[in-house]
Image: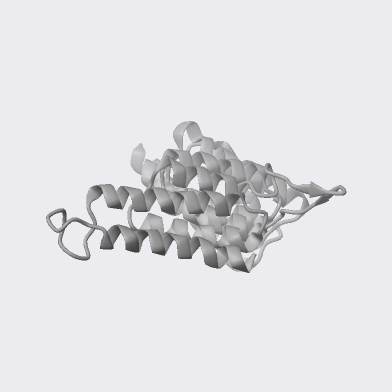
Length: 239
């Protein structure tokens, strides 16, 4: 496992170095890569990421997430980046590896990091992956991070985002109220409402009232009341 972690980056650096050293004098200034070389570098990087994502090792998946973050910083928002994040987001939930009936690839920390990076990716496809996470995952810390990323992206076509958030918060509220999850939902409602000029879904109002009066700590209750007032203000402004 440690060997693979070292070898993949080593191969990548050797190949990139070879490309730079092998430049023609008239192709590009020393130390700079041509478009073709940059494309090859990105292709090699994605090959390494794909292999790390498919690995059974949690550590290799975490390294893949580090490489994906670096790619996003450089502006890479390709379909391959999304596909890799989508696979990691469903690791142990939809993509399950079992041995003698035991789940072997339940890595909540991997899914949390994938949720964060999907928010950084920010595409409609990333939003769809996050909604799947909110509806399918069984770890509140993963769902909380996915809701934060949905709020960051801010897309809410046909109310699909707020419907997914409301359904999930109501599910937890009925059996295991979670303050951090509820707070992430409140913040998401506020951000989406500000972006689209309000929220008209009665389910959102109901869940905010439930949080404001339910078994939650006072700061969370107060935030729910604040957002209820903000929704009322936006509705009055619209009228």
